[in-house]
Image (cartoon, rainbow, N blue to C red; front, side):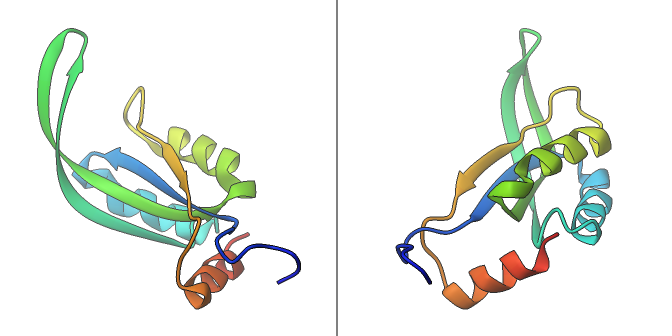
Length: 110
């Protein structure tokens, strides 16, 4: 793979919480638009302070796989689709992984 280290990939894992009722539709749109190769959706219980008030909410945790070059488009699209005023959108680099999966994910994206 050229001069690239095996621990270096173009893949990102993006974390985003959403209301349970909107997560599935959001995931489908992002995959159909090829901004995410795959989205896992898990139930989550979130605890945070918003506007000075302690909140505890049931949410859906979306775990999206995308490539670095698509992150800005993905972030913009999540904001457009999301019902929250300030959605959580956090990207983490994938530094190592199962090479066939990483190659499949990258090939699945726009």
